[in-house]
Image 1 (cartoon, rainbow, N blue to C red):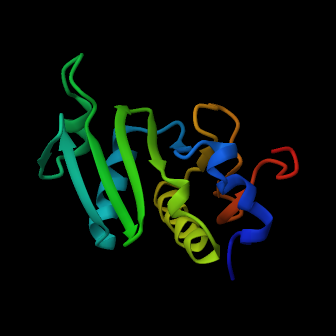
Image 2: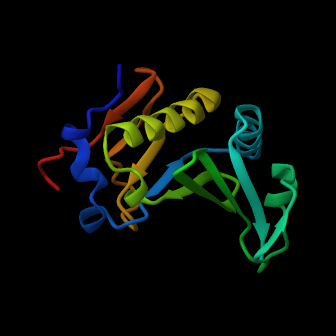
Length: 161
């Protein structure tokens, strides 16, 4: 059974309302949580590409990535949990896991199911919520993985948007 039904949440996946690249985050994270995500990507066999300053490199340990010198360009990890779904993780800080998704890739029930499955995998691995917010609207999640419910849930009123 699907975590969310497309008709109930499609407003949250409208690029005109949400911005095309909403923010997805895991608050209260640690270097160990970042490493757990890197391990999950490898274990699941999700296609990925790690880069620093535009140069593609092998995926490093989280501790090495997050200990880069001040002023260094932020590394990114591009992960494809499905062929047409891309998540771009940016290693801004060790206390929050942060990634973007492109809403244009997440249209319809099938893609929503892939996305919810991706959030669920991360949330279960970390035992922490995974929250999606409109682009640039920090602190107002609309959907997210709820640890206690063990599923992705609606966190905002769809009628308000």
